[in-house]
Length: 70
Image (tube, rainbow, N blue to C red; front, side, top):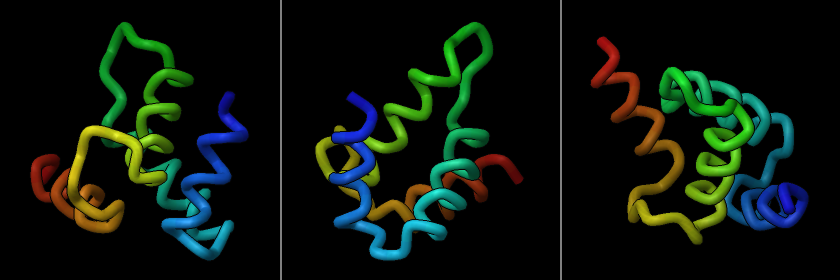
């Protein structure tokens, strides 16, 4: 469930407002056409929670995504 993903992500990002802002930015950056937004958001929350397949911190992921987009 998504609520479980959110609770795990809050442990990585202590401020809930900041978590929402980072999750929305990351969802926009990582979203691929012809996929559901919900799937992308779940993937982002998995990455923030640390159970995802990425070893970088959420801030590093967002920074690297912005560098690739530029």
